[in-house]
Amino acid sequence: MFGGQVLYWGLPSLQFVPWQVMVTEAFRQGHLPLWTPLLGMGAPILANYQSAPLYAPNWLALLLPPEVAISVMAVLHLSWAGLGIVRLARRMGLNDFGLAISGLAFGLSGYLTGRLCSLRLITP
Image 1 (cartoon, rainbow, N blue to C red):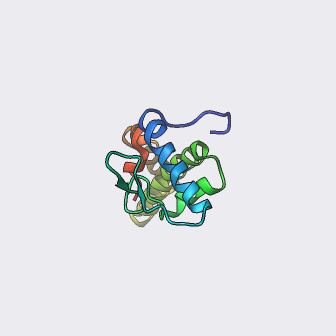
Image 2: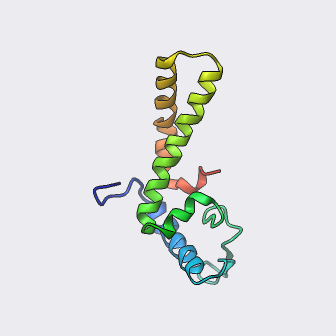
Image 3: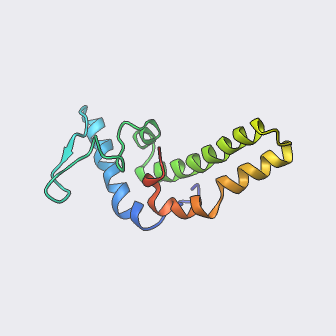
């Protein structure tokens, strides 16, 4: 993420980065990205869960280049997943070692890291 490389492959590069650029440019021009004629016969952008322009973490693209913003969001989502499990494990009464293992095991699980190729499909 900090060495000029991204943490995703495939679909994000071909689909989500261009959508993020389209959404970011619309916001910078002062209007909501409601619709695009560039996808098929046209498609909604504001109501599309994959472009998700109203999802606050996507606003990182207003501050960072879109490809970097998506990498930062990938790290944030994996971290949030791990922290969520830590909170659950704490309520279940696990000790500090159990909390650490729970958070790392879930946040860096094969399922979640494997889903980075379709990152927008795992965001809430």
